[in-house]
Image (cartoon, rainbow, N blue to C red; front, top):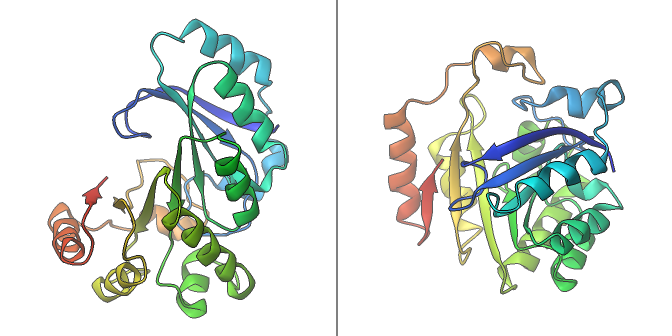
Length: 236
């Protein structure tokens, strides 16, 4: 398992939970605003953290940490993801997986085997090839169908999940978010994430590191609009 980064303690990656965060390498998207470009473009250059090291830390913090978030990169590209989830569950931790939805077979396996407690599906854009390709930086024609399949799996499941969208100036407008929301009616929870780059933070396309984010007022406008379409919405 290629664990390339760890956040020991997080209060923001899983609502209502204290968690540790594991970053896995590789991704099949090239989102220009991605803030983990090294994991996407040159994962081989990043040091791999042995699972034993992570395991030792988690054992010491068992009484303080509710769960472990697995993110990336794209975790479902790793065939041994079920093994990692299983080990974490055996240690007594809840498990959350972040995914772009392009491996519905893996998502279904995790759910059916009880290896995951929460899934956060990153829905990048309205579900058209043109708009999804623009936001993901690739020709999304072949993968968009898989994203839709993952959405269907989650919508029909009984497990906890959220759909989330990072709202990025130049890539998203109000009409895009409205179109997206109309295609995910029935989702349990929808999260609007504000794209914001910390000083000195790199993005996959360097131009996006200098991009002025939407203001808080603009994000509230998005929120108000979405609340008219979906029942459970929040800003993050």
